[in-house]
Amino acid sequence: MECSGILKGKMDKTQLMTDRFNRIKRAVNLENQDRIPVVLEYSSFASNITRTPMCEFIGSPAKATEIMIQAYKMIGEADAINYGSFFPYGLNSDTR
Image (cartoon, rainbow, N blue to C red; front, side):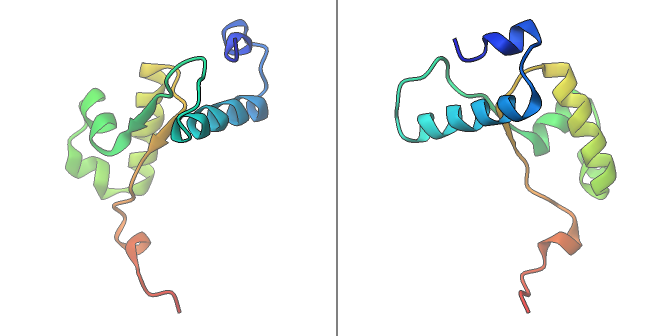
């Protein structure tokens, strides 16, 4: 099983990232795999599970990062996160 190293604490971070990435790729390609990948949608999820008001979560990139890490530790294993940035300076569409 692909995740057996995770359970035994023997998998290094690079291998863990590669396995999670490959699991997601196989899912997108509709291929068989060891389990369905778990991708957390973080903007509302992290705020909700940590009971942080959304205005605090989106008001500061540093606070949002802190809350996402806290939420991830509460949940445990996941293969990826989906997080859109609400930081106004990060939403600039000017590519000059």
